[in-house]
Amino acid sequence: MQSSEKRIKAELQDVVSLLVQKKYHELEKRSSGIRLTSYEMERAIDEYGCALVYPPESEFHSIDMIEVQNSNPKKWSVRFDLWSEQEGRSDLNLELTMTEVNEEKIAVEIDDIHVL
Image (tube, rainbow, N blue to C red):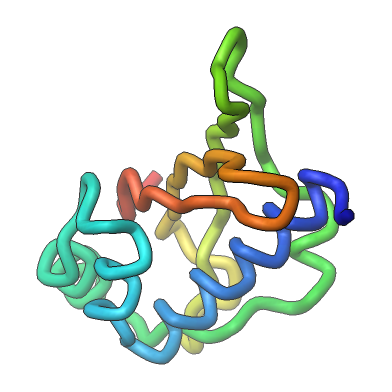
């Protein structure tokens, strides 16, 4: 069994990778279309005007996550700075809700992609 933090990190890495690859439909399916649609994800990134790149591995070592109090099942609010080819760390921010489904699985909802 992995710790919740390790499972959240792995899931976040997958989500960021899919965003960089512009696999918005896959992300919408993965998040069951809750909150952002593939079109809304694509639009937010296109309007920002920079090409996303996968961040350095070190960026995943201290994830900005807060456990939602009294949630059952356990939930976390996660915030992560996206990286662009032009800027490195960008002003574009990814916000997620991650829910523990069981000891092996974390469900993802993409809450927002926006400029801070």
